[in-house]
Length: 238
Image (cartoon, rainbow, N blue to C red; front, side):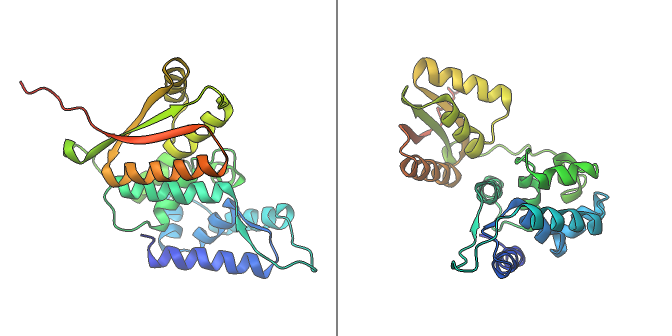
């Protein structure tokens, strides 16, 4: 699912972080790797980025803020939750678009969902945002107008127990469905009043992947949250 070029970039960042005894590999590590990745670097240059300045800022931030594993402990470098969410978003987007591979450019676009990260902050300082990157990735791309086969689509429905906090529910909706503020408020209201909410319509494989990930997350964190897929309601024929 991950392109060979991207896999090499990710592996290089993990190896480099481990060699420096970094406890975590972060979004800043990820973006630094993308500046060295051929296709992602080309997109950044097209967007007007100064790659040298970006690398300098990221390297300094990583050196100052990444915890170092003590010499008497074995180094087991782990990805941060933001790093994992970014990869997951890129995979979901690629699947939804029917792409066979996730590329470095997909990761670059997905990175902007981590709005509070220093990686995004450094990009924004150079006037680079998600929309600009998307335009540089697919210049002149027309909006998708092809209707998907309704029988191949699945609704993703979330059920929330009242014991589950609003904060935990919000985190799931933001991380797994990439919801913006208005949509998030509407879904939270549905969950609060009815205990369930429709959280999106996806191709079958993507819907099943989302449900699997949410179930695993809920189990790991002992959350009273259920999620399932359902067939899209058929429209009556004229």
